[in-house]
Image 1 (cartoon, rainbow, N blue to C red):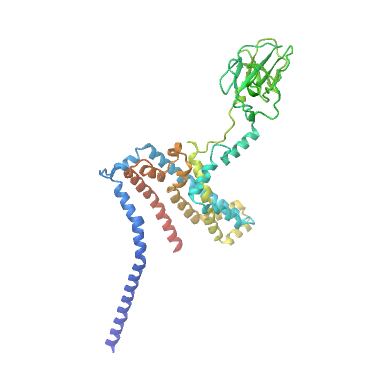
Image 2 (cartoon, helix red, strand yellow):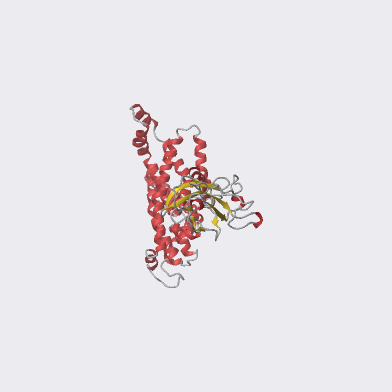
Length: 446
């Protein structure tokens, strides 16, 4: 009887072992395609890139760590590393802060779902499309770039633009100065005299609607009169340096009477017919001057894509795309916070700012950490926005490691040895953040 029971138990154990082996084989069958795909798309490229980084640009001569040494000796690559460091510090910090602020605010508005939807919509836009959108938005020409159109509109609301930026004095007609001003009369004038100041270079469409036919202000005993006018009659008729019929005055021009080595004795603004008069002048010699402010080029806004601002401008585009992502993740963590703790704090007399600083933020710390580290991983690999938004002349100023790697390898550098070394460096920088995030997920799931 005992032998029978022992044999039966052995058969059961053998059956269990066979079942376990079948399960393992079945698991291998299901996992094998994923492992093959992972090896083909991840493991093999990593190993190949590392091996390629040990050879020269042609891949024929072994250089060992030479490419890695070249990374720290190349000014353009060092600039890309500096920009990547700026991205890692600034973008995740701003995004996490904005996401936290918006997640808290959306809990206090009536249309919270619609608000979240609007902020999350940019995540549905590819980086390519987002780059094109912001490349156009950052255009310097206010007629094309929406940001500069707004900046110029605000600027011009508080500060008047130059009267005639394209005007220039007609040569040989008694005015000295170069394009852009200032212009001064060659000789001096005394009270009781008048002067005609002729200009050209003003397109008919640029003339103010209020401009009238030019007329010289009549001189009086203690005054100097004159006219500033467009010295070009319709059809090209008329005499240069003389006010002819059909020639209009230039209204709104600032004119100064200068004496004693540059001291401004009087100032006047031309009327609609271009006339002006300095009154109450003491006897003496005066020079009539038109300041450069009359001829300044119109304000064109901010050079968003210039060398100084191109990286912050691209980071701004990145914020537009990813703020919704940070807000939604932090909002999910905020919804999981026990409301009892918040209500107890309010009953104890804590203000909303104290609740936010001492309860909400500490309880959200794990979520904030995951969001921050995820964004760090993402910005280390940013490529599309930088490559699309930055114009060619300032591309080097905006480069990060990913764009520098591509440019060195395929964008004209044709040095895949150095490009592979950059890819290995980028991988080594990303891996610690990935490991940290995976450990956080495992701890939160256990």
